[in-house]
Length: 209
Image (cartoon, rainbow, N blue to C red; front, side, top):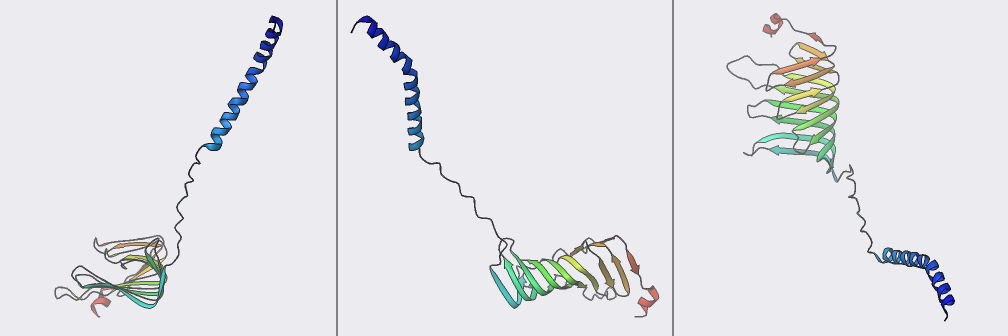
């Protein structure tokens, strides 16, 4: 091959060499992508649903303290247990609890949401919580304290009752209603707020009982 032909062949080679290299590079990239291991797909955990895992009819659930003494009893017409919140939703509920000093607390409502041991209960519809103090020789008998409303939130062991709805407190001949209530028996604190109205029995009427 003479020099001019060799030069023209070299010029053609140098002209198409970048295109050939780019083609080889693209082919190599495609091969790597095709043969690379697949990225594992992370499956999100299934959402926890608020679905009952069992139900009870005409039941009674009892809770005992460490000494074996009965603390509380929750009764109802029908109840559904929800494992995601570990709560019981009860129709026609009745709760009875007795503390170490013999004070008895009862609660009733059309519907209730209770934790597992019945120590915290939300009462919905015709809610009533009554607390009775035991008789003591060093003081006159105390009339029961009764709370009435469409919604009451009771902590039985902590001796607290709260409500953010209209509620009425009744004790003996005294009757007080308000738009909200926060009662802490252990601290002996009662807060009633919003449109508070009351009827207090005269002391003479109390003594006449």
